[in-house]
Image 1 (cartoon, protein in one colour):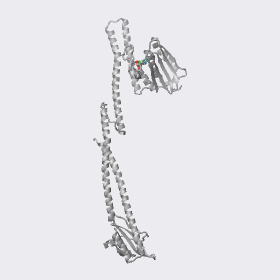
Image 2: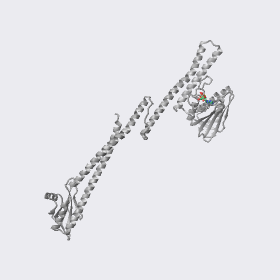
Image 3: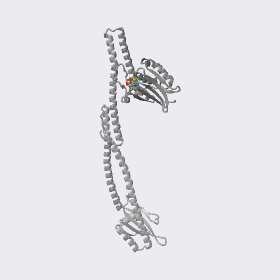
Length: 461
Ligand SMILES: Nc1ncnc2c1ncn2[C@@H]1O[C@H](COP(=O)(O)OP(=O)(O)O)[C@@H](O)[C@H]1O
Ligand SMILES: [Mg+2]
């Protein structure tokens, strides 16, 4: 079970490498043996040819004897016959070889350079050549046969085979060892990773994988490690988020319950009762808003948000928004001015775009002193369309700016009834800007004011 993969890899490599090696050895062996036989045959032919020349020069008993004698000393043999194939002389001790031989082979004509009668070393114990001896008148006067015992060739081949077997043994052993080491080397980290992912699927993200390899397995290990960290982070974030939501929901509920109790238990004047009921109504509205915001965020997170883009004539659109927001500004004795060139338009979802602007203006009202002014300024810049919301309010401390768009983040941590924001407004604005392919940036100075910049990229001007 544990080494199934390594066994598979090992066997596969082993079979492939062994196959390759065997084919190579087979061909090499054949080539070596063939060329060796070829060498022997051609040297036999050369030797026969030299005897042929000698005997053509003088075909007498003494020369024939000399030729025979020369071969007795060598590992080759010679046989000289007359034109009728009657043996005149031979270097063989054993007469029977010659007789058997002469019955085996017949031929019609012999080329000048000699004829190979037999080079099949597996079926016969000699390889043979024959040369014709021709006198000065062009008449055939005899034949010279050359013999090479295949024993010596067989011995050479045997030795060659031994070497090949030894090499094969060494190669197979080395291959086995190398494949074993390799497969263990590959399988071990894989098993570790399997263990790690198993742990992760059970919710334990405290995995640590060795981070030393530079290859693909190392990459995989690092990816798993990163995944574990990310999942761990997500899990913590989710828990924190849930805790925050619970807390945010509880605060308005506490007010509602508290004031409902008061209204129910005490005998209140009609005026007081009205006041408390109004608070209850406000808090319920806040709860509804909070839940709406949460749903919006959840949808934005999952990209389920439908953005229906339309061309918006900005000057008109902002004028409408200004009208809608007027009571809120009036209530805080603040003023809103819109600066927008008449020809500018924007391609965006009008409902969502309004949500963005209203959220930001809402903040400006909330976090400015009464009497101050808020400006919405629109301008065409080279990278697109820039909308700025500028207020002279309380500003945001520099250390809070990086987090200000996080969910539930508020500068004022204490959630009083006066500053009752949920901290979701900017998070939603940011997601909405993302969904529109736009950017949002914040510049703010404490007690001086805040400028929010919305950049819609590549907008036609
Ligand atoms: N125009 C602004 N001036 C000063 N502070 C701001 C401004 N806009 C946002 N903030 C700060 O950023 C926080 C987060 O804003 P937001 O996400 O809209 O949540 P909420 O308004 O519900 O508190 C606010 O609580 C406030 O502290
Ligand atoms: Mg807000």
